[in-house]
Length: 222
Image 1: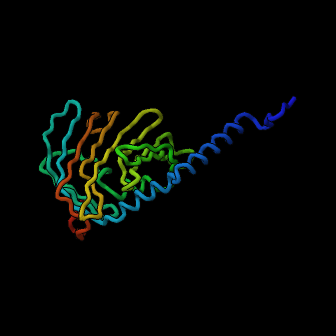
Image 2: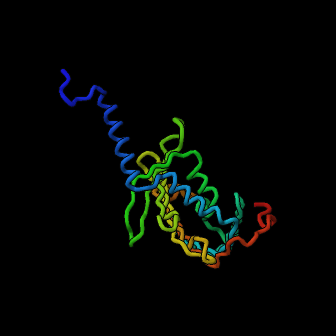
Image 3: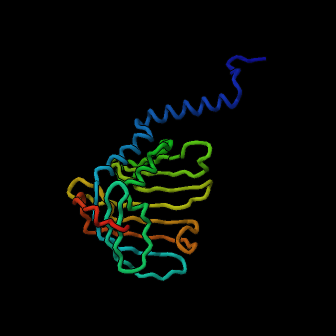
């Protein structure tokens, strides 16, 4: 017998409705959606048409002894990149390529705001990115974005419960209007680096020049 106040809907439907109501209430309380946050971060990067920078690369990979390398990075949208190095160096190009990372974060993926917190008086949002389609696999990303500058603070990539890698950024303001990396730290928890190694790579930027009109012939042969 159905008691007063008892729902006729299956338990799973009730749970889904409750979760949806909670998500709507939470999104309204935050006042912004995951899609809006990611779009703001992507739009900020789109202002950089090209850049040139000196980068000191510090490599900490298990069983690998490599000195600090000094390189020069040239980048031009949408996908041109050149790295001049004084010797062998491991550089996570995905962290340097402003276009490919932004495209990966926005292209067709489902973005859901899953949290926010205050750090040093600043708001830091956490957005979960899930690839579309049933065949997309279990890979997903957590993207952390500062709410005042709309810069990406951290990206974590997971497959199932295993974290594949993490990239963190610290920024500097160039020409009073372009937020560009000052530090990038690339970490892998698995054995994803060359030779099946794990570890981290730190990139320290200096002499950053933005929108200098880099010629296409700089990237010839790359």
